[in-house]
Amino acid sequence: MIELICRTETDTRAAAGRLASLCRPGDVIVINGPLGSGKTAFTSGLADGLGVEERVTSPTFVLMRTYRSGFMPLVHVDVYRLSTAGEFEDLDALDEAEGGVIVVEWGEAVASALGEDRLTITIEVADDGARTLRMTPSGVWSSRPLEELVS
Ligand SMILES: Nc1ncnc2c1ncn2[C@@H]1O[C@H](COP(=O)(O)OP(=O)(O)O)[C@@H](O)[C@H]1O
Ligand SMILES: [Mg+2]
Image (cartoon, rainbow, N blue to C red; front, side):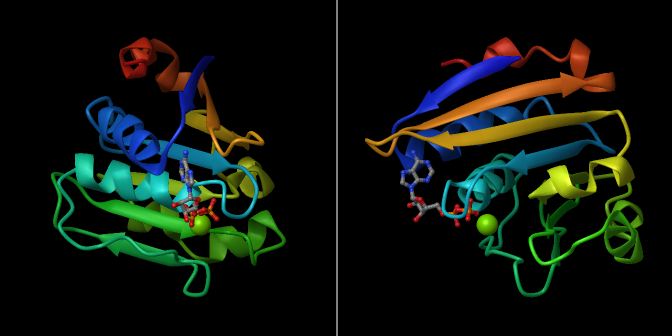
């Protein structure tokens, strides 16, 4: 597990941008943390790092958005409004993300549908607004040099 302190949104985006260089096709990233903690901001920074040209906006209402203008596809899912792993499976998000990276906000709830190979990021908000990002790798992520993200 590695821990990053991000004092501003810019810090959070930059950390996510560095993570992009560790991403490989087929990767699964889960982001947990309360509403407004920066899950979408992080995803947007990751998109920048992947060369995505479009602006990333929250998929809370559409559930899933795919960006194809980067080096590999980025699928961004927000499962806040889903209650079961079955509903997640019905989205066919993993098929949609084939050959690319999938980021699942609130992914904890559907972890059973996501498999072992994933990077789980948990965001905690301090009283002064700083975000602590805890990144826990499992499966293929265990051999990635996450320490490179500590700037
Ligand atoms: N250190 C920080 N990292 C990320 N976002 C921050 C930070 N400090 C303040 N913010 C603000 O918090 C909000 C995060 O929103 P968003 O990314 O949509 O959250 P979520 O997707 O977790 O609901 C944004 O308005 C952003 O400007
Ligand atoms: Mg969000």
